[in-house]
Length: 187
Image 1: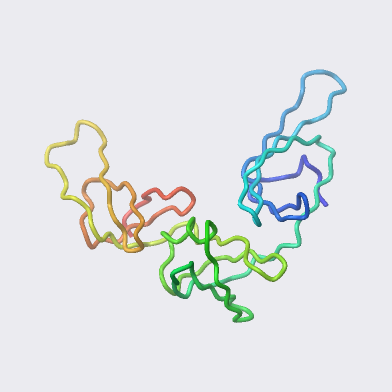
Image 2 (image 1 turned 45 degrees about the horizontal axis):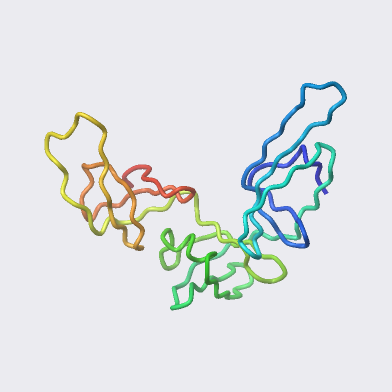
């Protein structure tokens, strides 16, 4: 159990008998004397995918979920989702729906991920912070267009479309931030 005042973004806690990932944590210290600390959280239920808000007092207790993070590997895609393997036990899991759709643009066959396992099944997939992907298609850069910073669309080998600087060409490898899908640098 943890105090509400100790909660951090990214923690996995248990609400309504389901594991939930904390997306935002805001602490508000009231100005009135004797008033207690208020903690406002936004979380995602990992079983249903629903995003909810909750207000807690600073001394409220929150159960941490019986949640395991395991090193995993993305093997290949199927028509319904993707196949992942636990690197310790070599168990394979088929993951589909919104859970797979949110990360499929960052995954190459054989790529490493972190699997979140709850009650023997994966409920979260976390790719590395940055991934290196090849640019498959992008329009040519515009000459003498430097008055403002410009970007152009680029299609990457996984099907992900991102905004890149105008100097990048097809065939180049770029680093992409998996948290929000933006271009970081050339690889």
